[in-house]
Length: 130
Image 1: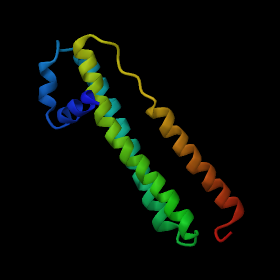
Image 2: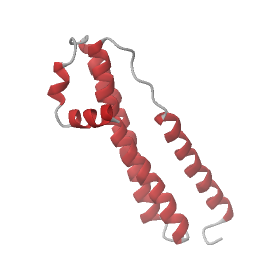
Image 3: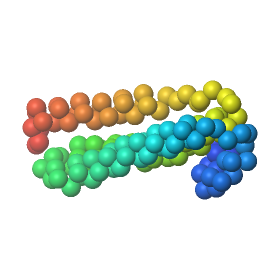
Image 4: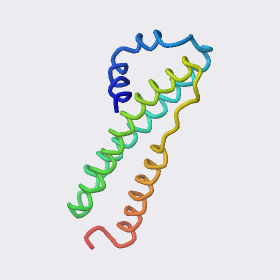
């Protein structure tokens, strides 16, 4: 928990990351940044999907619409937070010469997206007002 709090402070002071260890090959830092940006694009897509479900499916029962929209919006928010935390953790690991950190988040995100997709398939097959 202490490492997480420390990492949160580094989110807002990325220059402080430079104080750790040695500077890695810039290609690795750039790859880490590209991965960060890919996670942010995923987060934006999830947030957009949540708004789309809420705004463009007015005939869907309120409970289904709000549930699906909130699931997508929450997944997008978590994905954005995870992106910056993972960027900091990877950058620190590279500077310290440690193994890159592992995470269960990709599996969790995949499950959330799969559940939302299955629910949407059921909604489409059963109908909007079931």
